[in-house]
Image 1 (cartoon, rainbow, N blue to C red):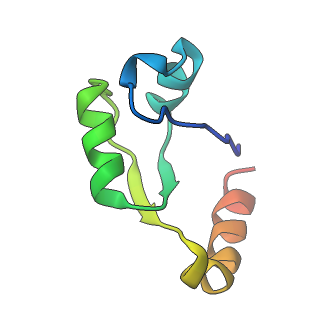
Image 2: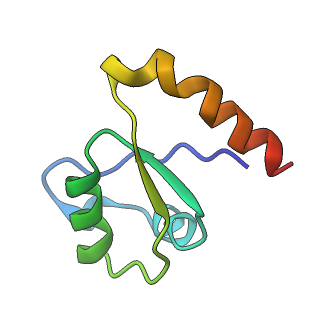
Length: 75
């Protein structure tokens, strides 16, 4: 399943309960910066520890086939 979750800018209290619920059940999480995302998960006390995959403009074309495979394997 693919989820797209927006994260708060500036104030962690702006995140929705649904976003927190979803973050707690992910196996893999694509993110622009794994360090910042790790900090976000820690601050939000996300018990689940998904695999963090770095995904940003410069690697987008390279990583899309890998991401599609992960999604297809989980159908």
